Image (tube, rainbow, N blue to C red; front, side):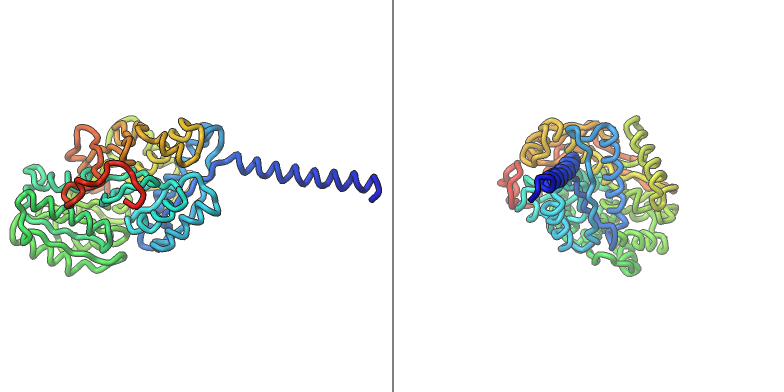
Length: 421
């Protein structure tokens, strides 16, 4: 090869190599963050807003310089309310997209689906929704409530004079692990308070169920036997026909109060809530709580929804799992800054004891051993504008009990995260 051709070839090779290096550096300048929520199917009514809240939070963190000097790059996938697909999408995020962390899932069946993948690949999942407990993985941080941070206090309230002094309990849920395990815990709790099996009814419906005419009629019949409350663990878009049927049959909160564990401001957006006034929900946050942090949080969300032209932006609302998503992303970012790394093992260690001033008005702490947030408990009454009036709350955040004392053998479980637990 002539000297001139050799020089040209060398120059071209060097340029290509430099371009490749530049692209590699550019790619390395962002931190990929996975968002694993159903954007279609029966759970889209609840999960889409969590995806949008994650994107808003990431945008806000990036506006302040990102994490460790790098911008966060969201990678959004849609597991489409298909539980095995959650595992496939989770594996894709970890192995192909190389994300540093994943924020996602709503139902426990979706979390159970992805859990083996995250433990196998040592991924990190932040799970933002209340659940049944009975799990404590080193690869999951739980920013939603355990049963003692939602279900148990809600039933204690229903038993109280302020809550109506219920004597009979109709447990209605979607047929999967969260409602069944939660109701197993609640049945044992009710037994411990002297409630007999004849005063407890337990009914389950499939995901996407839409005909609640017979069930609501049976609730009315059951309530003829004494002061009754309904404890609802119905999930997804089935809540809309359930609440509409309550209204159709004139079942008011003054007759039979319903306390829901999976219904918040977002689920009520598409319903005329006037007939539902007085029915209850138990959460760890409501949009209506009055404090400066929440005022800013709500204002930011409404502005973001409008700027991004999100569906229903003119009636944008916040809810508990959205707040838990927001808190989780900020806590992960704080831990990554503390660790000066996004390495899973280093971030996991740095998360222990992290605190964050949350929109709930409380400073929340990530427990040093059990991977759960210490959370306040609030019970709210539905108002005619679809918001909630808080009628009861704890004085301070409660430490989670992932292993319920109402399930035999749990007293022997370790109080720290172990694979396969």
